[in-house]
Length: 360
Image (cartoon, rainbow, N blue to C red; front, side, top):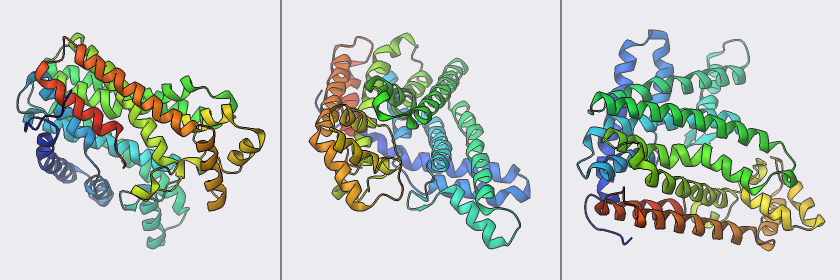
């Protein structure tokens, strides 16, 4: 699938991002007017966090799904595209609590910001507990924004209902993936299998990052669930490949390009990199990994030694190979599909390249 220069391809869809941003700002302004006065400053925290930045790739994929299904201008799907950004804020706010993160999108995480506000106010009680409680609730508050946004899309009622049903499915599967990820994070790396890692990636990342945004857009465009089978299967493979790429970046590989430290190692994440390296590592190499996994106080030298184990065991190369295999399988499925419009196939090819060859 060659890259097309048509404005209906990926670059053309990014022209709608300003409309998505305006829809996000409009939805927060409308909610603020109806919110109790004492909650408005906290609602402003969500607004600032969501509008702070982000690649808006999930929003673009909603628009892509609509265009893949219809071949038409995706403007009717703009509210739903904004809805996926509300959902992304929900996930990030809660993920940052779980990961004890301090920064997101160039600013403080929501729970850290709320804790700092509590300290500055001089109120009694634990600032940390207050920050976590407020952030959990503010994350939850993003869900009604998401549902309202999908329902606000200018599609027939049956199409909007199908899109909301996909949203409910996406939310449930994402939570399942998070639960499995938390369970595996406490296990000995020797007991976690590659299939376990890929199942977490399928549920936690591939569904809500790629497959469901495309499906929501296509369903709003009138596509049937049956006609989405090839697109969904390809999207799951691409979503898993996307997460495997993220795991490489999160372990500090390509860090020179993006300035990202090896956070995933010190957080103890059971990525394919770690699981595959453990299978082939010597006892001394495993000891090197143990000194880093889940240890926030690991030194820079210890992290560098752990990263070298990932290289020397062939784990980095193996992850790259799996990314390539998943991408090829997805592309072949799209090329052979009789349910994906021929004119839309170059767009899916661009999406595949953007997901799997990124350096950020």
